[in-house]
Image 1: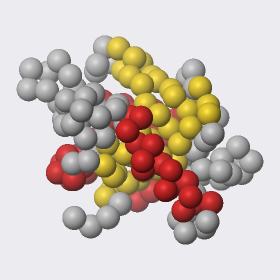
Image 2 (image 1 turned 90 degrees about the vertical axis):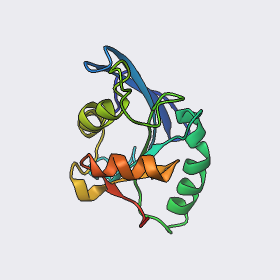
Image 3 (image 1 turned 30 degrees about the horizontal axis):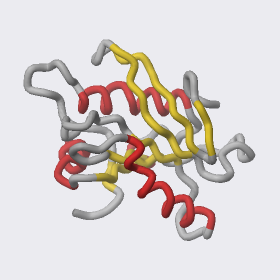
Image 4 (image 1 turned 90 degrees about the horizontal axis):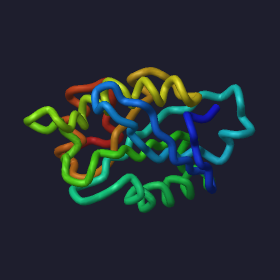
Length: 152
């Protein structure tokens, strides 16, 4: 089951959803583990990857490549990775003027969208966050229904 309008390539898909908060379409990249297409009754944990200042979801390729290798080598469990579109200069938080509700979109819309569109384990203990900078990830964790993938 894929989200609206995905474009798949080697375990990745570009997708988007209509955000009420952003009043626009919001894009993201999603990585699927190697067995996603064949293990159709399996549900997966999700790791949300946040890019740093000046980055884009595509910056997450440096995260996905070793993750995919670890899953294929059975050094990590199969999981879905969502490469969040935090805009290039948002620091993954809402802008003070309210024009760019990046954190709100992630917490209130993206996570529920991903749980509805893909075969996730829709529980807090099956979600994690990773990315740059760590302070942004920690703030997002504290305000949401996400767990950290590692200790600070």
